[in-house]
Length: 332
Length: 304
Image 1 (cartoon, chains in turn brown, cyan):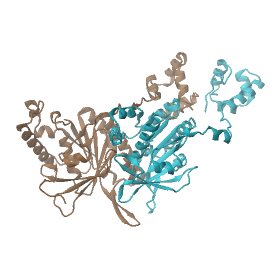
Image 2 (cartoon, chains in turn orange, red; image 1 turned 60 degrees about the vertical axis):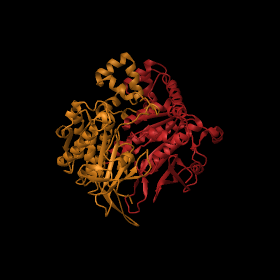
Image 3 (cartoon, chains in turn cyan, purple; image 1 turned 30 degrees about the horizontal axis):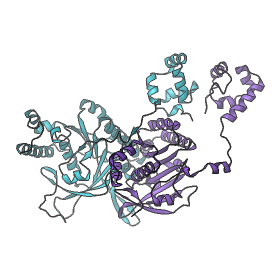
Image 4 (cartoon, helix red, strand yellow; image 1 turned 180 degrees about the vertical axis):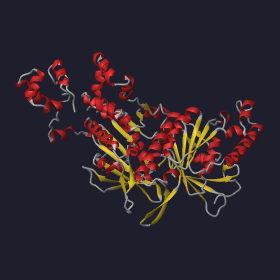
C-alpha cells in the first residue's frame, strides 16, 4: 500500500501541483528524488527543499521502554502529602490539571509551584523560572512576596542547621536568592483568548530556563465562546500546543479548571468542566476541595494518573503558602 | 491507486510517453480507450488489451475460499491477553488480523488495560510489541511497578522493557508516517494509545481534514491487518448529547465501523479501582456479555 501525497504536511498549493504532475503517492516522490536526472528538474520547478521532504517521509525511530527508563524531574510543592500523592510533585513534560470550586486553593497551589520551581539545584530543585498565564486576574504579586519570604526564611533556617549542602554555603547563590530576584523569575502574561498561547513560543526563546507554565484559569477565556464546536477547537489546539511545548522544552504545564454541574436521572453531579475529551488529554488530574466545617483545611484528590491509584492528600493554606496540616491536629 | 511502473508497462519509453500524456496511474490507464493508448504507446491493439488484462489481475485482490482460510487459522492466530476473564469474554483472546478498540471515558483504565495486556503478551510469547504513544503518557515507572509486584528480577524486567518499542507521536502526520513504516514488520502487535488525542483538535473546522486522515489511517490499519498484524486502539467515550448520559465512542460515526471488535469500558460507581467491560460490536463474539476486572498494583487482573 502506498501513502498518498495529501497525507504529508504540505500546503494545499504544493499538493495540487504535485497531483497535476501525476505524483499521487510518496513513493513516487522518493523515486524521483533518488533519480538524479529527474531530481534536479523536479526540485527546481516544484519544491522548496529536498531535505524537508525527506524528513517528512523518514520513518520515525522507536525507543525501547528500557531507553525511556529515566527518572523525570518533578516540581515539588511545599506540602509533603501532595508530593507523596504525585510521587514527588508535578512532572515535567506532562500536563497536570487542577480542578475545584472557587476558593479551593487552585491559584494558591499554582503560585506556590511558581515559587518552588525556583528551588536551587543544591536543594534538589530545578532552579527554573515560571510563566504564569493569567486569564482571570488571579495573579497576586503581594501573595507571591509572602510565599517567597517564607521560602527564604526556610532556606536560611536550613543553612544555619547542621546539614551540609553541596555548595549551598556559596554566597553567590544566596545573593541571587532575594525576594526581588525570585519575583523577577516569575513572568506573568495576561490573556483573554487561548489563541494567544502561541506567543509562548517567543516568550520561551527569551527565557529558555522556564520549567513551569501555569494557565490559570484554562476555562475562563472559553466562557465567552458561544459556539461549542469552536470552543472544542480552541481547547484542543491549545492542548496540542501546550503538550508540544511541554515535550520540546521539557517543562511542566499546570492548568486550572472549574467545576460544572450535570443533570442526570438520579439528580445532579458535579465534575470538572470541559468534558471527557479534556480529561482525556491531561496526564494528571487533581480535584481540590475545601473540607466543610474545618477552617483552612483542604483536600487534593488524585482523579487520574497512570502511575498511582486513586488517593487523597490533605493540606492547609497558611500565610507561608501551601503546607502540610500541622501534625498535632489529629486527622479524623 | 498504483502508479505505472516498468514491470507493469513493457519498457521505459512507453512509460515516459504515458506520463507525458498525464496517464500516471493504473486507474488512468484502464480508463483510457484502447485506440488512444495505441498511438501513445506505439503498441498494437492486441498488446494493449493484454496489458490491461494483466494489470487488472495483478492489481486486484485474489480469491481465497473459506476452507483454505479456515485451515490457515492455527492456534498461533490467537494471542491470549493473560487476563482470564477477558480471554473468556473474547472467546480465547485476541485474533491475529483484527482491530480491537478499547473505548471508555477518561480515567477509566484504558491505558492500564493496554499496559497489562502488553506485558502479559511479552511474558508469554516473548514477542516485540509496538506501542504508539500520542500523549506522552507512556510510563515506564508504572510498568516496572507492575513487574516488580510479579516478583521479577531486574534483568528480567530489563529484557521485557527492551521488547517494548515505543513511538512517541504528537501529530497525525507523524502517526501516518509511523504506520507506513510498520508495513515491513512481520506479524506486528500494535497498540495505539490513543487515537482521539490526535483527532480532537480537527473537530469544529468547516472543512474537516481530520476525517480524511482518520479515513487514511483506517485503511492503513486494515492493510496491516491483512498482513497479520494485531491492532489495539484506545478511544475515548464521550457523553451523548441527550439526557441519558450514555457514553458513545469519540472520533465520529465513520470510525464506528472500523474496529472489528469494540470493548466498551465503564467505571463502576463507588468502585474506582474496578472496570466493567462489555462488547457492543463484534463479528465472532456474542454481544452484551460482561466482565468485571480490577486495577491494582499488579496491573489489571481478574481477581476482585
